[in-house]
Image (tube, rainbow, N blue to C red; front, side):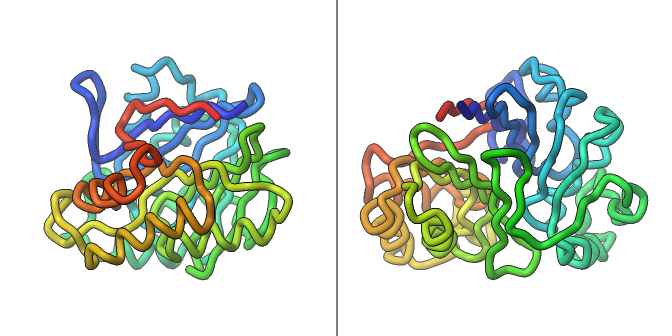
Length: 256
């Protein structure tokens, strides 16, 4: 069984903290794992409020090298003394480029993360296992990978930003696991515009096409999205495929 908890996302209820970023905690077959760490380390405070003990996380993964997913790992390493973080080698350079300009670097983000904590990062291109039943699958973006969980309902594909394209990622996962369906995709789809979560960065028909491809062509049963998807794109997808869309917020819990 997989139980996912969103530890930080761009939106949150009053008792939790939001920031631009994403972090997911996985309780999978009785073991504790982490995907991404948000931007600043505030996800650690949310984990405490949600009763999730980050010191017990056995292994972690980084979906890609941008600061809104890697920036909080310094805080995680101070709380957890042993869990390695599995990332693609190109994530190091992507992070350096993303954090190079001090004027654009978010508060709390350490540009020297990969140097200071080099011993905690396990860098390799997959596919490889995070744990039995949890697969790290690289995609066409050099520093990006999906975390794919085998569940009784089918595969759950977690990719925090889907820079390679959500439908393309699901298509590749299906090719790697031809006997299993993709039950759900969880993450952001990089559809937001430049002016914030209330803006749309692509044509509306492109969003509708993505919805149709995921739900009808690729037969994904649950589309769980937030973060860099943005509100207009989420609404368009929900209108196109009613009943399939599930919003992600800080504190959201999903069971598969």
